[in-house]
Image (tube, rainbow, N blue to C red; front, side, top):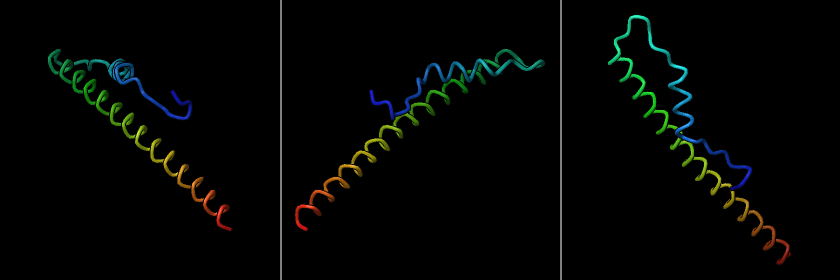
Length: 79
């Protein structure tokens, strides 16, 4: 794994989110559980989206670097 790429563990991230979401004083158990489940699922999806974006952006950055190097090689070769 490349040290420059940030990856979020989706399960750990989601667990941390719901751990910081205590039950409200007058909240029904069913409502609380639904809220926790919603937060968990949204957190997992968000982390996965981030990881996909990070992977794509990392690949784009690498492609731009390759292109810049290739342009420099061509420039020096023909000048």
